[in-house]
Length: 92
Image (cartoon, rainbow, N blue to C red; front, side):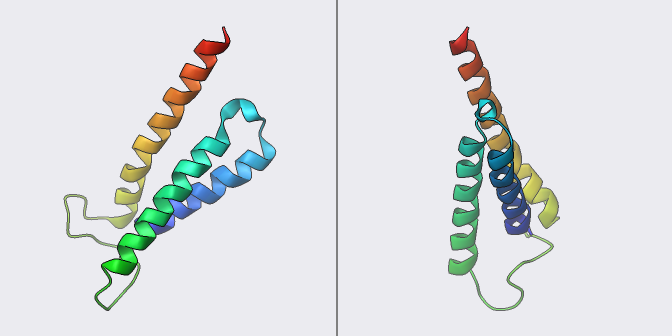
């Protein structure tokens, strides 16, 4: 499920990049998110042992797959926010 949540976020950032001005650096956000999608997809393919490819539950600390996807998106959005802050401080 974390592959789905990351893919939706990446598609949203890509669509936003086409619509919203460059001031928000959505290209950088989309690049980070599509990189995460590629890494998660490779992890799913290499770790596939049969059964459901997209699982709703996990065996880790976070049991819900959607919550894991959201938890994985938080550092990406924090990094993007920091890059926006730094670029805005450089303009002044």
